[in-house]
Amino acid sequence: QVHLVESGGGLVQAGDSLRLSCAASERTFNGGAMGWFRQTPGKEHEFVAAILINWNGGVRYYADSVKGRFTISRDNAENTIYLQMNILKPEDTAVYYCTQTGRVKAGVQNAGTYDSWGQGTQVTVSS
Image (cartoon, rainbow, N blue to C red; front, side, top):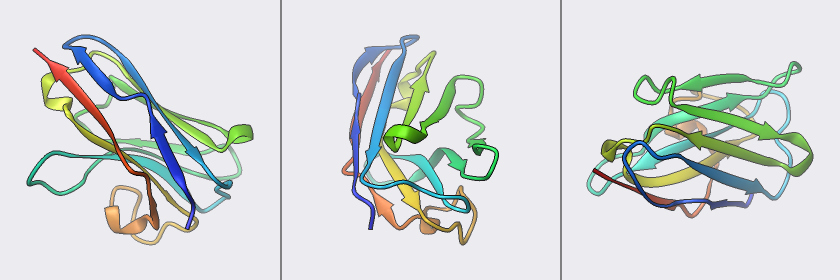
């Protein structure tokens, strides 16, 4: 498994921005993916965003609830992905998890696709 470490969570007000980072212990190659999920108490992991790695850098996917507000990006040299979150809303409050797989098996929006998960970072948005 790849070791993932998230950082960047915190407490902000509605309308503010945050950037999450996820440092991976090794590189993800073509055919793999890295992404972000979030979870609130009593609920399952919810897909947020992902990058499917390919020869052209990657294809980005977003949940409808964050499209236009969140941006996922990747720094190949540092084996790091980022989640830029703008215009945050109280409903974005959750623990955010970084995920990784060397081979996408069931779609990038499916939590079961991913083999490695970070420890999570809390994002709290006050109204």
